[in-house]
Every structure is written in structure tokens, then in C-alpha cells.
Length: 127
Image 1 (cartoon, helix red, strand yellow):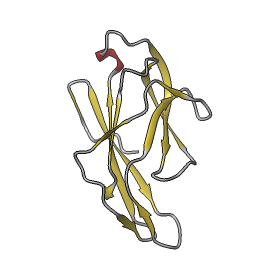
Image 2 (cartoon, helix red, strand yellow):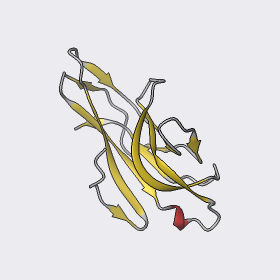
Image 3 (tube, rainbow, N blue to C red):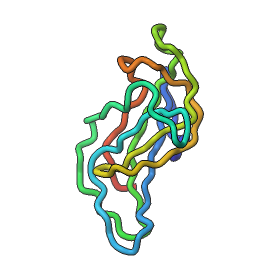
Image 4 (tube, rainbow, N blue to C red):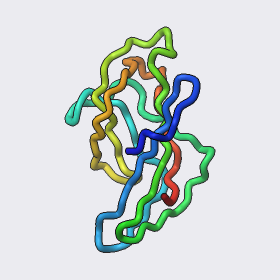
């Protein structure tokens, strides 16, 4: 994850970067599933990332060694007065069309309430 993407009005933008480490091309299409979690083996805290449909979904064919990226926005939990803040150790990320997840350590504040959406994820594009 590249968190140098910037921020605006209580939000931080990061790039999720997936690299094809295999020997064959692979197709990356759609949205990652992302949630804040208490730890590498912990369950989600609050709402999962909402999809940002401003970038159309496209087939991103990755040759070996190539990468695809998606923009993840995290909104500060302190922006929500009804938020019951709880520490999150990082993000649980599910690649599109996959049930296996990755854990990215990045301590953040989460909101326990599922009605408060702190995360937004865009569709994958070529890096």
C-alpha cells in the first residue's frame, strides 16, 4: 500500500497496489473488499469499504511483474460525533473475486457502528 497519495478535509487517500508475482498473465477486474480490523487474524470493525463508482470497472490484464492499483480513501473517525472510536491495527483486503485475504498493518481509528462508513474503494486500473 502506498499512503503518499495525499489527503483532504479529514480524509487520507492511499493506493492499493497488486503485483502479478506469477509466471502467467492474470486478470484484475473490479473492486477489492476492504475493512478495518483489530489485527492480522481479527474480524472487521465497523463498515466495509463502500465502492466508488467514479472510475469504470475495466479488465486490467497484468503480465508477470506488472501491477494494478485502486484508490482507497480513509476518512478520519474523529469526523463523526456518533462514532465509538476503537483502535484498528490495519486493513483486511480481499482481491476481486477471491475469498483469501491479506492483512496490511496500518494503525487507524475505526468506528464500531456499521452505519458510519470510513472507507471508500475505487475500481482497479493499470499502475
